[in-house]
Length: 95
Image 1 (cartoon, rainbow, N blue to C red):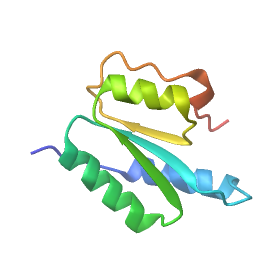
Image 2 (image 1 turned 90 degrees about the vertical axis):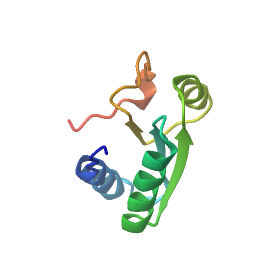
Image 3 (image 1 turned 120 degrees about the vertical axis):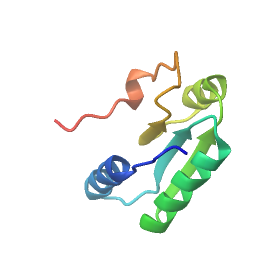
């Protein structure tokens, strides 16, 4: 069984919420080949942050297609998602 820690995601979402003055829904993309993992992450995030919009991708191809057509405030990606390059417009900086 895989262990999942979403503490980093919670930290980033909290920062995004604090910077989001207009309080628009925060858009998140979860990329993982395992449906169960995506469901666990989705459930944990929705329970912690009710004002978010979550989209999912089960493959790199699906994720790339979604990234070309939509902007996400946060991307949570499986460590093993090979060859997934995120457009620079989606990069997040704490500086």
